[in-house]
Length: 267
Image (cartoon, rainbow, N blue to C red; front, side, top):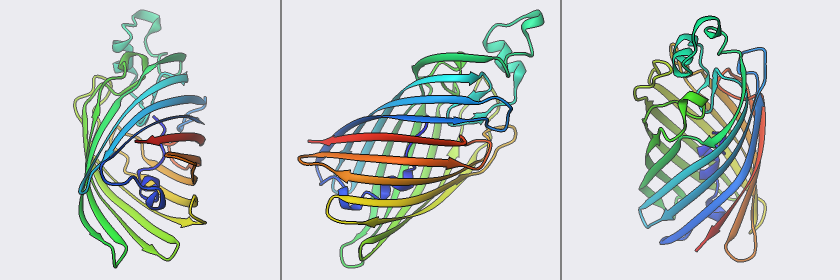
């Protein structure tokens, strides 16, 4: 699933939910890229997002609807999976059909892998205008791996998030690690991820920013990820918040480019 960087979400300081608020959101996101191959894969993602913000804890759930057009070897969130035998077995291919499945193009749609996360704010300083949080995330194998809508494994991630406000600017960063479950597609190797970013509050309703995300490559999977995201957030009248972004990828685990528009309503 293509998403706004977790880093960029930290840059929502001017638009953050108040303690005790619940929000729901959705949007449309589009990415396209070759992922180190010769043919392009296009992915449209429509996520449904629910979030609760407490005093020290926040919780988030995301269920994506995906439409994928491209080679079967490309899995959302993992990049290109060079493991033709396992993909052939998943598709129950035999004889002359075997070995072609990696480059064969498919158009599929359905629910992708869902995520549940919880963040605990370990430190929040009103005077220093900084904060540090610890996040745990579970990716559930709700996507059909035989169609390439998911990895077929339940994965666990842990990360430390931090931010520092300076006048109208906010610096933010994250350091994390993902532990992959057993996938019928390929043996995923546990990997680390890191990212940094900055946002600038233009006024009371608008902010812009840049975020860079990187993930290790595993052997044989997942593919390495390098992405630069430019984003704009806007607070509408009432409790509506919107975000638009443009993404450029620089590694086999990332699309060549992507863009999206998302909206959130707080209660």
